[in-house]
Length: 586
Image (cartoon, rainbow, N blue to C red; front, side, top):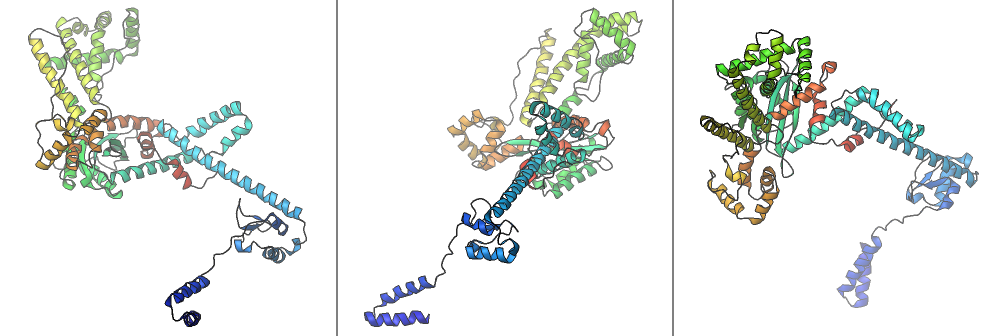
């Protein structure tokens, strides 16, 4: 600062006190006192005589080929490099350049080998994850990788590519425990992704409980939520019920999962169950307990179960026909000789079928298929029972009994068609309600036609519309909306561009896409569209559970396998590989 004042005073004396010259001097001094940027030195091939090569390709740092130390860019001076050689490796100071050249080549080859080995290990790790995912998706045992897949892959690779290429596969870890860990990693990653989605969205759940091959009760839960401008459903969890399958115990499992994953019950807008007492009990059922933590939640009794329960109510006359059919089928199916003789009779007579079907109470379509098969093979049954002198022959020879059988076969065929139409993914309450309403309307039409002695059952169906403003907001007249919601509906129905999009998108996708612009209206619509209409997903998943946890794997903890198998979310395998240290198989 003193230097600056002195120069300023001299300048003012020379220029007669002009202040501008002082400012110029100030800038000059500041430029002189500012730190100068360090000069970036470049590597010169001549530095090899001192035993130094560039650290990595095109690097500006020198690396000693003897001790492999890396020096700073400031050390890229012949004097400093020579000093390192003399002080650190004095015995090599007189070696020729060729010596250091050979050392550099040895080091380069070592780095290449290490890099190649690391790359192979990383590929083997990823291949291990891919194989584990395939095994889980196909519901296979973990040991299949080591006992079947790897030996087959080695033989195929050796035949097609040669022994050298096939040896690379030996580095892939495929042991039973390794596959189990890989599946566990992917399951945790899938659950993490799903929970992150649920934490920022409203959602609905469906749940059901069943017993596996080991006698362990399993609680299986699916979730439906809004994501990526559409409604998506996915597997949530499958956990063994510790003790009893009461409503309190099942709710405790649900609540513990919500707390552990920081999910809010206020975000759960719907719950669908199968109607069992533990689920729908008024005081201690799961639904009742859920209502204590989420007052406005919508509960749904699975419509497939309701249809199956309604179809069980038969009067005494038709009930006796059904029971007689079951007794007749069991009389033949439970005796292997009768089964073989009846099959031979059906084949000789040119029948479309050779076997009867056993009745299973818990299967939704069983009664209809059993009745249909008995009616189709009525002539063969009459002949076979007559040869065996069975007392059951009087039923299949009675025209009145056969007429009742034909009626039951026809009506249960229609009920099975309705049941099948209610099954499947992505079913919503509006669509399933329409199908049931249409079937009830057909029943009234059939009743009228039968009274008029007409048995033509091929009648078109017309759906009775509820929530028309959700189904088509551009043609609805009457609604039960609030004032603000009706205002938004008026705006939406006048938007021609949205009307074009409505024709191109699914119903759920349309309402998800307009949620930002018409929030109140879309949220009201999604409270109807998001809840499950059936527990079909849970029922279908129990079939997968039965395959995964078979009598040969009865002690398997099945949740991770079934999540990787059923979830629509893909595990982030590359991310999982980066979090692991790659090791080759031993």
